[in-house]
Image (cartoon, rainbow, N blue to C red):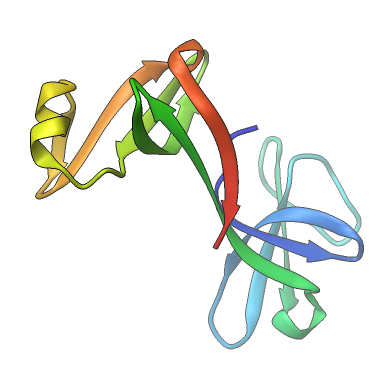
Length: 122
């Protein structure tokens, strides 16, 4: 699984999460659970106090593509959206990356083409 976002550990389970205002954390589930409200089909949310959460962290997935470092920011089917993490514009241009903002380069790549897929807790 490729993840890029917050996760929280609550009651011995891990959930996708979003820190909120006033000390709240939104927990997200993909199946019905007690106390979770369905916000759309297959998406359930529960708001808890941050003091109830055992752990809240940001998870980011890294990889290499064509020998260069990238962050995986999304996936769809067998494709992954990569953002260049090497910081060298000439390399980004040589790789044919799309410029999405000043100094920010991205590309869709086949999942089969990426190497060294790993998660980092920030």
